[in-house]
Amino acid sequence: MLVCGIDIGSTTIEVVLHNGERVVGSRIARSGAFPAEHAKNAFHELLSELNLRRSDIDRIVTTGFGRNYFSGADRVASEITCHAIGVIAEIPSARTVIEIGGQDSKMMQLDEMGRVREFVMNDRCAAGTGKFIETISRTLNLPVEETGPLGLAAEQACEISSMCAVFAESEIVGLLHQGKTPADVLRGVFNSVARRILGMAGRIGLRDEIVFTGGVARNAGVHKALEEITGHTIRVPSEPHFTGALGAAILAGREIVGTNRIIPSSVQEVE
Image (cartoon, rainbow, N blue to C red; front, side):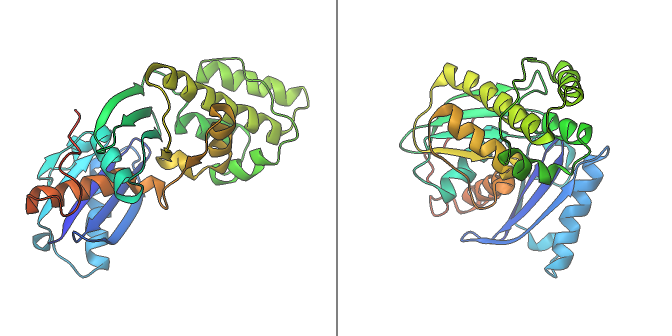
């Protein structure tokens, strides 16, 4: 059996091939202005790399912001479902999942069987998402991958009072003009993102073990801010940006074998 999960996000696209036991290949690409085309290219490039053809893939499940853009999919699945399955596959003890993507953030609470009990989403404002951090990195003229380490080196975090990403950017420019360092500004930005997530937690609660996933989970500064503001130790999967695609691939495999060989069938789908 060989199945594929494709997570078409607003910023990046992740493709995972799974054989029912483990990941056999993965690829990441930028979504850009043409996510359908870029997803198709990433999928075929991964197949070419592994000397495979489309006919070798038994089932494809897509998820994410652009899950309906991939015409060759056998079915689509919600991000909530796929991230829950992907997290449980690596960290079965997970009870709360925090996922921060390019344009939205989510929090899920799982029960002891890995089922999604409750979830909440922030998809109305860029603040608290990866897009906000990307915008600030451009304002600071820094590669986004350098923001985490720099923010961790801050001597004192700036207070970012604006709750809107647009106004926060203006506020940050003002702080820089006042002589605040980029490190202190970034630490303030990370704290602001973490407070947004904590606000979501007030609606469904935080239960250990807490897992942080999505592309922003690779940012050590945001991870640290989340731990400090929530007061909890938070785990990050080995490849947090692939969690959604992994979950989609596992879901595809589960549907083929019709058993709980890959993931317990108790993990129910959430639309």
